[in-house]
Image (tube, rainbow, N blue to C red; front, side):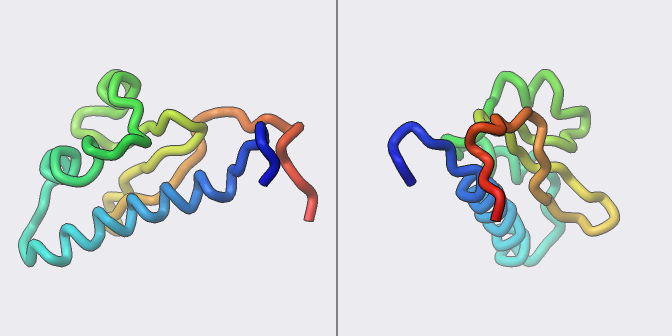
Length: 98
């Protein structure tokens, strides 16, 4: 990508990678893992996370994790997993029609 452009696709891929890391953590634990443990071990250490916004708006118990970019992860209780969601506006100047 050209300098100064925004790669929204890469941002979504990063969200999926963090989602996969959480899924792998639970699988490898071989036991019930609560979202507080996932926060401490998987999500909080990530440089993607907007800690302040997540603490303020993530819910109790935590159901949304906000990234510093327009994406984040939301918890699906029925599937017991985290999936990407968009919480911020995208700049149309950076969107490409395929």
